[in-house]
Length: 600
Image 1: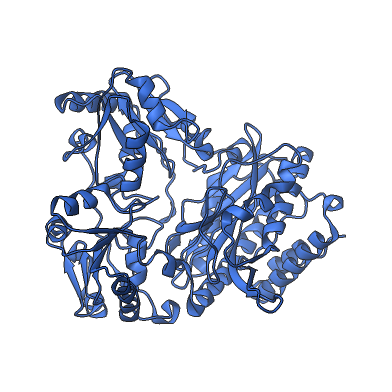
Image 2: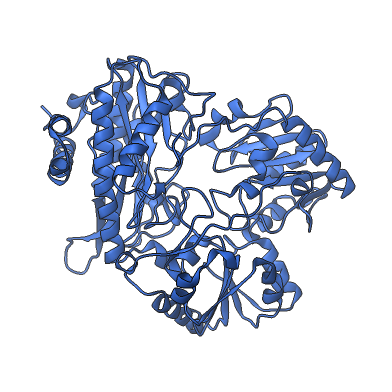
């Protein structure tokens, strides 16, 4: 079995009804009418350690976003469009009900579930101030009160809850960081001083890991050190993390201005802070706000000081990402070449996942960047499908195979999706595949002035699907970290995004189409924002495509492509061929030559 991805069924057996019953018993003991169970941990991470996987433990749902609200007679699992197929296969419908979100607001659901009102508990370490304030406003006049509780009732009824992770921290190489940790701390501290702020509380482990030029292994697939931090306006930093994570070398790397303290010391340290203290209402736990407010400390609301600097990659970070994509492109071409040589019907999804990981290991992968999505036929229509031994299926002749995967390398992070036909081509897939491809090309070729956000660009990737009455229920793109988390805030290509895009930022470009019960289509490249030529006095930006891998030609309706779209695809394939061909043996090189030949 692969050491990177496991394939056990994720539901945890048939214990979920009993767990729900136990939770309700704990709520009665605390005189609560309901409780909110988020996916997030205290760091608001998309991927959580086993000790923080409360939503999955309670409900069986393993998606990377969502939450549950439990009352004495209802248990709603709130999921967005990515998970509406997956959730039905993972939860016990006799006890849990899928709730479409954000179409159904939790406040509306609670008003219906608790018409006479009641006390609804939440763990203040697992929700942000922004989230709680929004829900409180939405519940005004309902006689429903949100109650912050000290003891999480899920933890109280979870007898074998795993221990918190203590993965070893390591030093991120200076050649790929491009700036020393001391310089980063000084730069961020100077911003605090300029704003008249004495300190900033930081709760995002990827921000802290980026700022300190360290990486870790606390959470699978995400090379972060789980921690909190308080940065002073002088550049000193208190790092709240298990001291066992740091050996002599990493302690020396951090230097004398960084003090390592156990997580249990955080609350007392926050109480002792002098303000103003910057807290990010969108990312910091509600509990941190309450501790400072109880101490009478002035709070300055503002963004995590590292969140935008981290998103603006410097030249060495961009160089590392290009190197990672070159290595990853070799692995992907070997996989697609190998796949085409296998007779249809002889492979399962897990077979292909294992083979892809083997090719990535040959390229020096340290981990995969997320569990590989390997969806054949109808499984491809599950947007964030995760294959298990229970769901694994043979890949039949005439099916589409959706491969969404990525790697963590010392120098960078990759995320790529390709959709390929197995054996004969399904004619029903050609039209939507071509529309998805045209959307990817449109975003890849976009030029736009400074100040434009991902919300302005989202329609470019959807326009050809919309013209046919089609769409997809996920964002078009997310930010990507440099040898960090594959999903990195705050930027994205989505109708909901209003953050201006800047040079150096890296996004995914991944339109798709999903026909439930039949197939899924998604194409994804990573793109870096770069300045482009413009008339004097006007600053314009565009995209550099980082991903190096052919796009399958067999599913393209070439006649539907405009001449400039054909030119883009031919140019991209020429770039892939030139960059990678020297890395292969004769068999894989011949496959690459065929896969990247010009359209006719």
